[in-house]
Length: 113
Length: 113
Image (cartoon, rainbow over all chains, first blue to last red; front, side, top):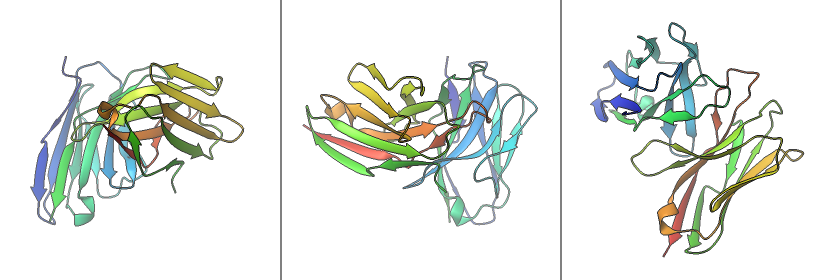
C-alpha cells in the first residue's frame, strides 16, 4: 500500500517548455488535490477533483491544467512553464467522509529557468 | 488574501520546553481545524485536528486549544524533543463549502538538544 505517489521527484525546465506531473493513489479515495508550496506562502490549492470525471479550480489555477484520468490518477500539466512556477508541488487525496484526512504525496520539486 | 494567519514564522525551543504556534481565521464557516507536520523532503502529514464544538484536544504531547469567539487556535507541544523539529502548518475547512483546506504559512520549529 504505497499511499500517494508522485513522479518525477525533481525536474528542471526551461521557460516555455511543457511537462506533466503525475499523481496516483491506491486508497480508493474520491477526492484528489494539487498544491504548490512556496517559502512563506504555505500550501496553496491549484486544482482539485471531488470525484472521477470532475475538476475545479483552486486558489492559484492560472498556468495549469489538470486531468482526472481515472479514480486513481490525477495529473497536473504546465503548458508553457514560467520561472514563477518554480515550486514544490504536492498531490493529495481524501476519502469520502466530511472529515476524512488529506494524505499527501512526497512532492515534485520543479525548477524553471 | 491569507484565510488562515499563522505565527511565528520560526521558533527555537530547548529540549523539554513547550512549543506554541498560533493561528487565526476570519471565516466563521470554518468548522474543521487540522494541524499538519512536515519533515524536510517529505509531504505534510496530519498531526492532530479539532472541531469547534470542543475547546481543547490532546494527543500525547500535542494539544490543540481552540477559542471560537476569538477565532483563534493554537498548537502546544509539551516536552519538545529534537525529533519534533519540522515545519508545522495549521489549516481550516468548511463542510458547507467544497471541504477544501486553507493552510497557514507554516512555522519552522527547531528543538535544540
